[in-house]
Length: 310
Image (tube, rainbow, N blue to C red):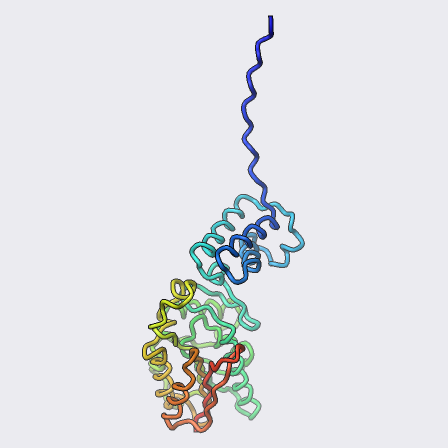
């Protein structure tokens, strides 16, 4: 008589996969490539370092490190936000490098661009130039300050300068103040709320400025559909778009800076692609400048008005 067949063992569920940092980088790089992202590996590494709370360089010496379930969940959320929803990398990571400053960014303000670094350095150089000529405390006004990147860079390089920065957005100003605190600049910048020069209500003409610098909204409203999803759907609309083909706010700044710009003072203004001719015409038409320059950005495109008042 045959022995009864023993019951089959209960199936053992497969062990959950253990993901290492290298596994996650490689998988995410491939996923981002399929989504058409321009720098898939870099973005994968930045998001993973954010999830793990470590410097990106640490990933290279710890490729075989298993990633905990908690950190894996964080990373998956970041990848979904970036790859599927196309949320800007900078908003997910929470900061951006602006020259030598780490600037916190949120949807309250535009993400600082590399082009604007040129404007910030130019403004800082004008302040230093005035100091080299014996002016103790040059005064600078940064309109449409957003995250505060320009004003804070100038403040970090020119300890004696008097700096005022304005924005129409209360949320943007709160972010700018956070950045000032994080950079340990004390209260070097006076942040004021208002619409362009309207933010200076209460000051006198005697408190005019030696340098006025601004990166105002300059995107043509009619090009909205052509913008990247990251820009169109996530960055603050009020900081992006302007009427009259994108030059309406720039026109107001140039036309009304006379009262608040000292004789011999400089206006530095960033504008959009293809706007250089009309911006130069507006500046020339005011009759208040004796030196009008159109400067190019790193891509050799006309991007900045630098004009000195008579």
